[in-house]
Amino acid sequence: MAAVKMQATRGQKIWRSLRRDKGAVVGAVLIGLVVLMAAGADLAPWGPAEMDWDVSMDADAPTVLPPSARHWLGTDRTTYDVFSRLLYGARLSLLTGLAAVALALFLGVPLGALSGYAGGYVDSVIMRAVDVMLAFPSIVLAIAIATILDQRSVTTVIIAVGVVNVPTIARQVRASVLQVKSQEFVVAAQAMGLGPVRILMRHVLPNCLAPIIVLSTLGVGYAILSAAGLNFLGLGPEPTVAEWGVMLTDGYSYVLQDQQWVVVPPGAAIAVTVLGFNLVGDGLRKALDPRAR
Image (tube, rainbow, N blue to C red; front, side, top):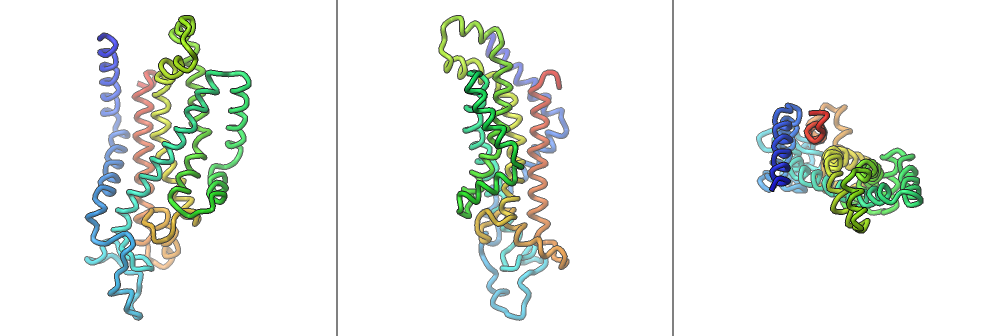
């Protein structure tokens, strides 16, 4: 009962800290707006790959139309409605970021936990492999993985971005495990004869959740940005797919032609989303770290 009350009190302190952090509140609002965009995509006036045939069938009419009552944010060169694709792109971009971080956690947490708790030869082998991955720039490594998979799809982007984030997760988990496993309650569990797997799962990892949560929140924004970069380089899904990075690829050439409405909306959406997750992640770091509070 006392333990439950202590957890509730700690949760209340964390919640109060987040509410008082203006940056975290702003970040939560920004993320909420992006989630609303994704949730309301079905209410968009046009489909994600629906052409305006009234324009495309007219040989004399320009395909890149400025914002109007018919197309709120204009159209791109294929007469796709930019506003509608922006809403549908929110779904795919959020899915890509969350799935990539989930993959990185699925691979990185066990590797980091095993490395930190086992130590010795196991630790050396895992960390040297991690160091090799960190020796390459992240975008170069992601490009190499996407090229090896040799398939333009959202799945390819998720795998590439997720694998690139594994070393960061693994190193953070290892550092946390090394700090926790020397605590008295872990030593007591070892003295009681508990197995290493049980100690790791029930006593060590639960006390490493705070840095993992913070790193995961910050990682979502980075994953969305990395995915947009891969899509911009042409390694993502086909141009007909409504994704912010794909929209940037299709529209960046129109900036110099005073047709910024093609490229500014997806670029601003990426910036707002990444900023939102970074602000929330920074707020969580302050709230979960007693020294920062």
